Image (tube, rainbow, N blue to C red; front, side, top):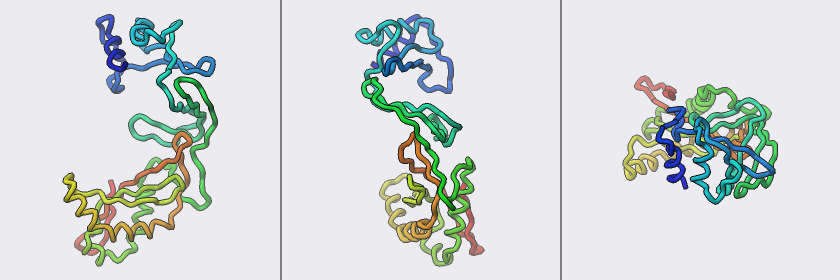
Length: 235
């Protein structure tokens, strides 16, 4: 269906792409009518109805196509933006979630995606440096003269889970070779376990993505210099 649809986009012999920063090259119009989701047009295409008719000959009716292939959800913003993945997806403080099965609306609800926690560390600031500085202050208290011998000053990914707790610490290997990378990870197991125990006491606010559990990862880079001082090299 996708191949046929892309072919039909240019049935008039022209390339009507509207935006070079939109990877698929087109935008579609959708409507919820009588608890059903419909594809009703393609933005910027004068022959939009003909495109839909040729692509969905058995499902096109009265200028629209029932989205029978769609069994998922749509999120409608009801407040200001909470988080952005840096590419496409965004979630908002409050949203209305519409759930569909084969294009039919089967339920909807209002969700709150941000839950403050008493004495919790806020993640609302778009500047992630606040979080990495908090993590750095904790690991800085270790005996780094001893830890540096194990190569613990390195690059890590810190996961904060749906409960606002640090759920995982991962080493970012300095190689793409799987075998060598695994050796690096094995060598850092003691460091990772030590970090996990230290981060365990931290409590952050709770963030959800479209009402669903959300795990957010933070990059942390450590460097122990020749003067015997630990430095935060996080970009």
